[in-house]
Image (cartoon, rainbow, N blue to C red; front, top):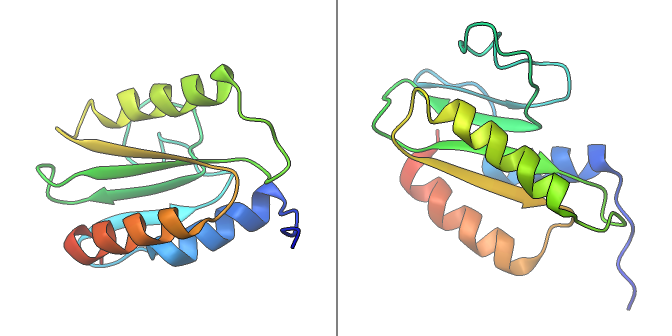
Length: 121
């Protein structure tokens, strides 16, 4: 059975829903393509993450999301983008978790549910 090809927007939206990336009382959280790190509190950084979870408690892990369409062949440049965004986040957080996603798979869902249960809103 062939999987449906998902656009980057679809992958980002699905991942955001699974992760529960919505603002809450103890974290800035969301998905999108127009929010800059500067708007998220990282002064002067104009890079734009695909998704983020930035807890008020800086000892908790932050999450950065990098998404691509399910038909995209992942390349080193995609990993480099994720690592760059993780380094930005690590200027304020001791721990960061980065996800590079091009399709939602069962293994991903299981890992996310475990993380979400422990850290997210």
